[in-house]
Image (cartoon, rainbow, N blue to C red; front, side, top):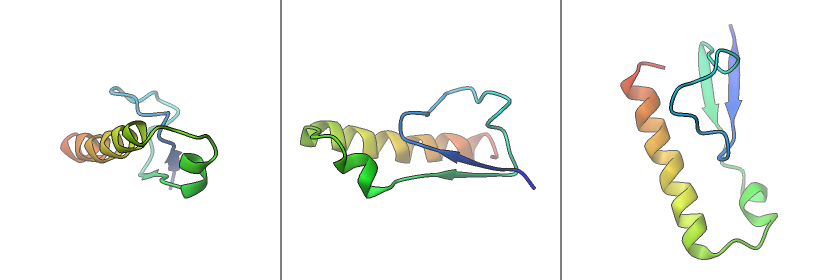
Length: 62
């Protein structure tokens, strides 16, 4: 079984062959968002992008 971890900066519309796996986990680690002093609007945007990407992966049955 192949497992892929996807970070918020790796949200590709068409998945590269290296990322295609049986299971894909979207990693929402607090340290990723707190490492840099992001504006609150950017944090909201990244969170929304992750949720939309999850819906996209579900729509293409991954």
